[in-house]
Image (cartoon, rainbow, N blue to C red; front, side, top):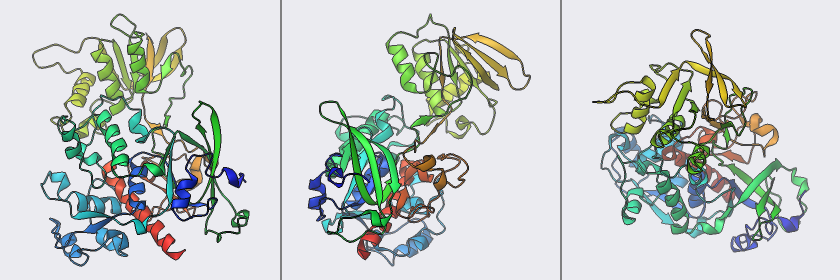
Length: 491
């Protein structure tokens, strides 16, 4: 067990935070949140005493939900014991009942672009605060801080907003405009940073903290007689960078831990020979660096882009703007209905349909085919060669070919990094025999509390629980906050 006197001091979380919360300096915190992206920010907002109230006389376009709301007008949503009843029957682009409920209250007719006002108002009630800290390995905003800044969001800009700070109003005040109602990743990352400041949440956030271990302790391990034994007790260890640039360990104790790390930390690999730098890379940042350092250009050998998702499309667009010759290989057929491009409206996502046209090698209106770009559908990579080549195989015929390349960018998805949990968190997943995956094998959580089914006191939010869109992950924060506040009321 860690030295108790390092519990908060080393992490910089602050004895101040614990003291202002009325806790003994070495008591375990009620809540530690791992991850400072939108999931962690939204939960911190709710735990800081900001509470949603259903507006009196609220009128919802969904007649069934409208009737249900008449009974709770003017009441706090966090205090309702019938959230399951309220969310029953709602449908939308999420499998989360609470995600659909909160979205329906914040954006009535949201999918139809209707002008309906939110049916929730927010009040700050400090007496309902729950002491907590938010640990993030990087700046506030999580993965949004490391994305290519000029990329445009897939979702509408206003669907990226957090409670009680309209994104459209925020961006107007900065003299910027949305493109097709979509924002750049730079806009979103700055909005999340501003949100923490505007809502006075910064005292709870500790950036630059890399968590390396989370383990549940037996309750008799807690020897501090100044406080009652908690129901559950977790030890959270990690490292942080001090002011002089040194790495320093930290250790925290928590009654509850919330996993909100997102799902993009570890790039999915092909698993073929030679898949290593300096030949092969796995992030958009690598091609940005290569373009900036002039390692890629019009006269270089082709860049091999592997993948048929939106990230691969972003890489194709970026390289094409730099006049870099491109070989684009992907396993599916261009007409495969499972390709994401076949699911996006062309008018709203013109840049991605341009890539789809390139993949199909359809001529531009009034012009020829895309110069410098070669589409290789139905192909897979067998081998990367250190001398600057790759062996490809066409799936339909088994025909192999060796192509010369300057570098390769493998963009076929990503997975969460849960190395700080026993066995990488597999025991928490829907299928414990497989790694945790946001799309195919998320953490198994209760649908309304988001507490892990296999571990009391441990919660999962956002992509880890299967909620991939900011618009819907806020329902998860509502569920976690409701559960934690019920626990606090019983203490």
